[in-house]
Every structure is written in structure tokens, then in C-alpha cells.
Length: 137
Image 1 (spheres, rainbow, N blue to C red):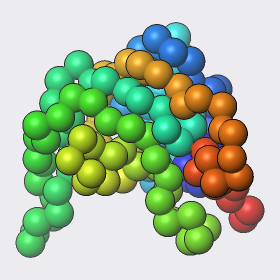
Image 2 (image 1 turned 180 degrees about the horizontal axis):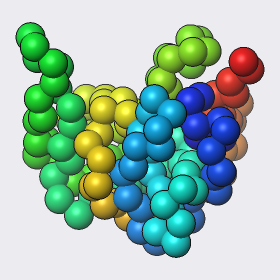
Image 3 (image 1 turned 180 degrees about the vertical axis):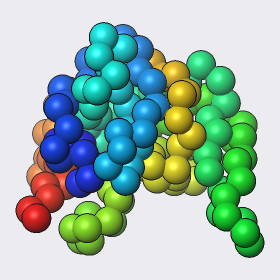
């Protein structure tokens, strides 16, 4: 399952080599869409490595609304944060400097490629890290 507000959107799991596009699904969040069908959300599991075609641009809050900020990074690792808050966005990108940005704040239209999926977890801690947040609403 993708982020909580995409629970009613058709989705599929990501595969290595997938070419994805950041899209607003009209549900209050952004996520990756499948190139073969823009209405299908592509769900990543925590630890998935992705590369963007250009440095990632994110919405940046300002005093009066939002602006945009281009990062210096084209690669990121998909993470989930705020797992204890059921009605919060969980999907995030971790950049090489350790900074996390909610996926819903990544600007629409950016293209990315799935480089690598995480290895199968061996320990309970690794299993917990890769576990997707389940939204019960």
C-alpha cells in the first residue's frame, strides 16, 4: 500500500528499472505513477533506491504560501516516517546528506528510475524497517 491518502487509488509494487513520474493523484498527496498508466500509483518499499533525471525540486513553505527549492541531489532512498501517526503522510525520501523530505512535497512531473530494491530482511529490526505503514480508517 502507498501513503494513506492513496489507499483508494489503483496501485502496483515497484520493480527495478521502473521509470516513474511524480504525480498528484487528487487525493491530497503526491506519489509515483506508472508510465503505462498515469492513474496507477507505484508503491515503493522502504529502502528502495531511486535516481531522478534532474536534481529533485521540492515545495518549500514560505511566509505567504509555497515556493520551490531545487536540491543538489538526484538520488534518494525511499523511507517511511511518522509511523505512529495514522493520518499523517509517511512516504519520504532520504537524500545523501541525511535530510528527509515527504514524498508529497516533491514537485509534480519529475521523473525517476528505480535503481535497487532492498535486500530481503534477515533480522526482526530489518523486517520492521521495511514494513509498510497500514492505514486503518
